[in-house]
Length: 378
Image (spheres, rainbow, N blue to C red):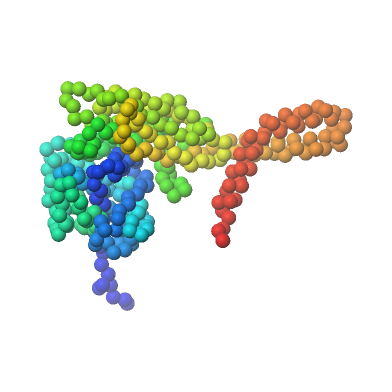
């Protein structure tokens, strides 16, 4: 029997700290906006993780994303993630990860503030030897350590899962309001997506990423929360701005895709209809906040979706393909097949070709694309 005396379990998690300096600070909105399971990535110069000698040390680890206030050096835990592939390209590490739960702070503001302070006191010991001073670089941004945020929790969290996720997002946004870089910045949160019957869309793994699974020729509503950090009291108005969603015109038709943002917080319901001609399509819904006369550049929040046609539509495509082939032969051999009604047979064949061509073409295109994807490389 082999000895297991040297086998140890590394229970440390990874920490990824990023500074609240443009443009990286604004990615906090994207990180907080997307649902659990969505992929995201970070990139760091090799110098910022002096204790990590190889990418494998931080691959496939439970990880805590932490935002560092550049002006005060305070560290605020944002969200738990799970790292995947880490790629080293020269001096840069590209860290891919999957989004997990937003950190669940207490609902009481005073308790929440103390939770952040307690975390900073603990992590200071892990950063010993690296100066963490305001408006200066912290030279250790990626490292392994025990879970120092394990004690952060809400004493009275909402029972409903969706409400709990939204509540956690709101509490983190409250904490970020103290960051000067986020003054007058709009935070958004994807709440969910549902069809006209109110059935929520599922998240599925497709083409290397998690996407909302949608049916073709169906209308959907995308629900989004919005918070704008103005720091104003007694006045909830904001400067002129709007929030919009888009999409590839041959995949989605936007029904209601633009809203004016008129206050510090709101809830929007975007509506669109799926419209593809192939069996399935992976695409995205970009969400942007645009401002009149502003130079602030905040990254687009991208919602990945997969649109799939129903089995009934596949039957229609097959029938169209059969009709198309039959019409071609009828047109070619009309003289011998219909000697008494050649002209009528040709007219009917041409009409059948015209009507069946679009669906038949998409079926052939879809089959060819699948054959190409399954072709071995070499």
